[in-house]
Length: 116
Image (cartoon, rainbow, N blue to C red; front, side, top):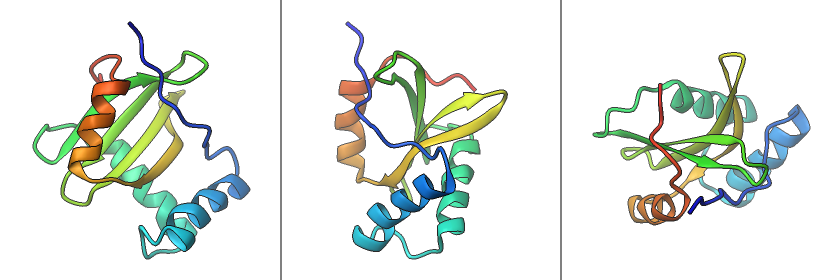
């Protein structure tokens, strides 16, 4: 059985990034940073190596059946979902969730191991 990641968010433009920023930073109060810092934090986590101590990861599928990479930083509780295009990470979503929520979602969304 294949599970699909349920998300409609993508950083396809500055406007879209700002929408995420508004949702997770301004309204959600999950972070205290500028829109540029928010995007940079997502990028840092995307580029972090999975060590299964602090950084955890797995692959899921988007609604369109594309591979989505999911990474979680246990220390900061930051979670990012992204795809790779021409060797560059492309953010789908970035927000905070606790360890229990990460593991629960992973059990539902897991498709394969994250290959780096």
